[in-house]
Length: 429
Ligand code: UDX
Image 1: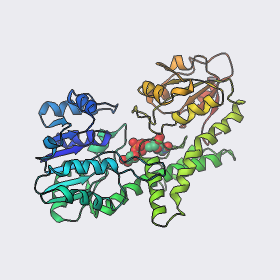
Image 2 (image 1 turned 120 degrees about the horizontal axis):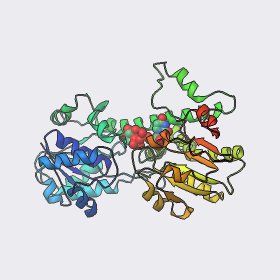
Image 3 (image 1 turned 45 degrees about the horizontal axis):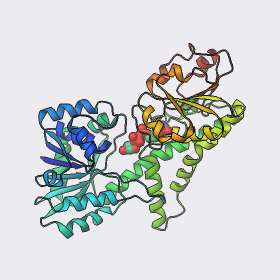
Image 4 (image 1 turned 60 degrees about the vertical axis):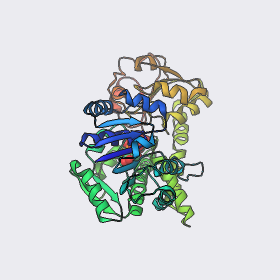
């Protein structure tokens, strides 16, 4: 098949490379000339393990190319996949302007019978907006579908090649058939639903996972009051198949490009349909307040942050990405700066990005953990990059009182304590 993927962010580039690897002819399109120039040279403009290798491999086969031209990309495409961003507006509404702009741009080049697939996360009902725009300009017949994406950053290539399911939202039999055929090499369950259900499923999945994280964070907070250890609690409840022990790390709250945005969007959407009293508002509120609350709690335990030298280890929103969107560091660092701490940061990949994002906080970014912890009164292991978890903090222990905040409960408290640090985890004291 001939496929065009519009939008070269995580979802767009990964999808384009994966569909190319199935033997289809794929064109990735973006209006950002810099991004496209970089991709043409085989350089992914963000860090995602395994993606550059796949990209180069597929470019070499001739199956994958990139362009800024709608005319070139869309005119021959059997399937046009829109994977542009839908960031939240300040009220939490999904900003569909990129989606609609892309739709408008592609509309005049569509070939007869092409399927326009919305992969971006959009509120249920959005396909009618897309249809309206297409109908104004398109001179040919076309089909519409919604195929949400469930990949995670940091494991995006693996997730796309090994999905738990593919959800296809469409209304016509032949559209289901063509899109099922497209995903056949994945050898996974294909779930066929209406476009609205597919769109709702994406929000439901992310909101459920965000709720799950918020729930365990709340349990962790209670553990701190009674001597129980949240990790032991998870071990104790996980074997219940209705609950499960997976995807359940307490910490400083969820971040990234999806959960905060999608929970806010669902809360906003709920309000617009008269369901103002909803869970999603609360989840968003609890997660947004979490870092402030934790840092205040730790302040009591460490004797205040003022004047403390703090090493913040892990600046991206999660390991194996340089994405800083809603990263805990973007709240932790300004908060510490405001509370008169001095901050040194380290991240295996996001150091440069962090310098820009938290520019006013006096953050000094260094290139090794050793350098970051060298004067530290407090070490905050904020993100669980392998090298941060594997580092020998025993070898760098200083001859002074030092606190070790394990923000993702990744360390063995007794080892950290044995090395001479005061260990502070989340929900485990
Ligand atoms: C998420 C969804 O998992 C994915 O299906 C969707 O397509 C996009 O959003 P992503 O944001 O890339 O993916 O990362 P994920 O690993 O799910 O983590 C999201 C946030 O939750 C991160 O801030 C992470 O640190 C946090 N998290 C995750 C927890 O706090 N605890 C956990 O147990 C798991």
